[in-house]
Length: 115
Figure 1 (tube, helix red, strand yellow):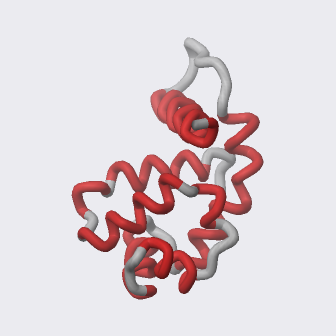
Figure 2: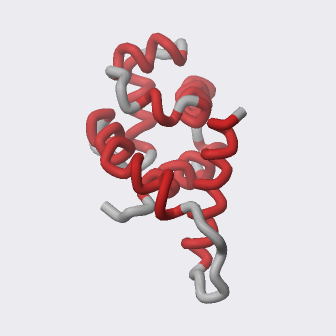
């Protein structure tokens, strides 16, 4: 997995926004608002707190390209520290579009946490 996986996950969630069911959108919103907290939740806890069924959480993770919730959660956990340090930084004129998107998304996530 790349250093930018957390930002990539956020980008995936945003890009699938229109393809999600109403229940899956609840999961996406919960994850977006509580990115760090999700690392510590079981699938049952996440489903309960997002007010959806466990199957919805699993379906949501598969739509993002993960085999299941554990793989999704592992991707978040492995890259949590990296996202809060090395991705956020100034934009460089040599940055590829993906790097720019990742930096912007990461900065947005950090700004939301500060509110």
